[in-house]
Amino acid sequence: MAKIAYAWEFGANLGHIGAYLPMARALRERGHAVHWIVAQVGSAARLLDQEGFSWLQAPTLPEARRDNPPLAYADILLRFGYANAADLLGLVVAWRELFRLTGARLVMADHAPTALLAARTLGLPAVLFSSGFCVPPRQYPLPNMRPWIPLPAPQLLAIEQEALAAINTVLARFDQAPLTAVWQLFDVAEDTLLGFPELDHYGERGPARYWGNLPDAGIGAAPAWPALPGKRLFAYLRTECPHHEAALAALAALGQPTVVFFPHAPAATVARFASPHLVFSTAPLDLERTAAAADAAVTYASLSTTTRFLLAGKPLLLLPGHLEQYLMARRVEEMGAGLLADPEKPAADLPQKLQRIVYDSSFAANAGAFAAKYAAFPQNVVIGNIARRVEELLTRNGAPP
Image (cartoon, rainbow, N blue to C red):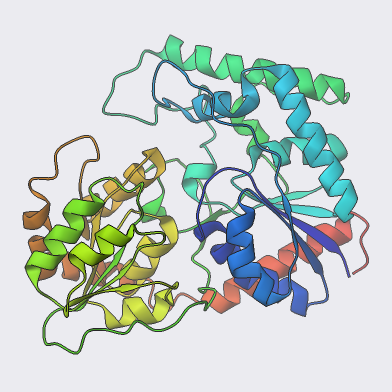
């Protein structure tokens, strides 16, 4: 048996833990102990307590304000401790102590760059368990994440050099060789990506290997659709989701049997929009069963929900709230499998976009083409392959086979 640390540092909500849970179950069945270090302990309590796992709080810092929105991945790092070497050292030491506390022999990192940095200082092997957004391409400087805003190369270089200065100061503190580019932080024992190339937030990144999508965690109930004729629609919304009120109004006006999962929805919102054809679910729903039964979805462009509906061949109306979600939504729109509602523009055309998603067969056809391409994708086999790769790295690092 070996001890494995799952590290989650950046991001929110249930998708991170839900995506890793099938992997954690498989590793536990193979005799390994998985220690969860998570960014949100509330999400852990909702998903992990019933599974018999325990968890620890990941070291994090509040987001620091900067003059511009994030322009490159290094710019995201600067917002969360990498603009100051002392702050970064504090985070790295905390991660090191968590790894020592858990006795981890290997780290599986889900958008956890500082955990990767700490593992590097300890000589622990690391495996990426992340989507394309969380793993920048092997480029120096890192590319512009907002290609619709032209940026001069010196500006991107300055952002990268600022983050590198803090990283290399910390590495020197632990007698480690410096990095010459931020992407090298992600050059670990196994750097294969989760997801599919069509949904890589960076688009064309050059040579890369994709693990694909893993099976869903199987958490949640089947949706209780209104017993009415029509197109079955599913919506996954949050209060921080731009245009959520406009989306509910459009769904209500369309009059189709609709199930809405809206965690912490204001009671006044539920009272205003609930009707015989639009019902709210107070508990998480099983995504696989929901996607199979639905005709279309309205979501905030989270990776797990978006991927699950595309694998079911169902089109989406996407309401991204931040950069990662926006880049994902752009990729789906480029595929012709959905439409996005720009969070920075009025939602006046949202009802028309919803009608197109529901009634224009081209969107369902393009989503169906994606589903057909990966219909034979062996998701359960992927879990076994990852587990074997983890055990190979553990053995190489001196853990018992």
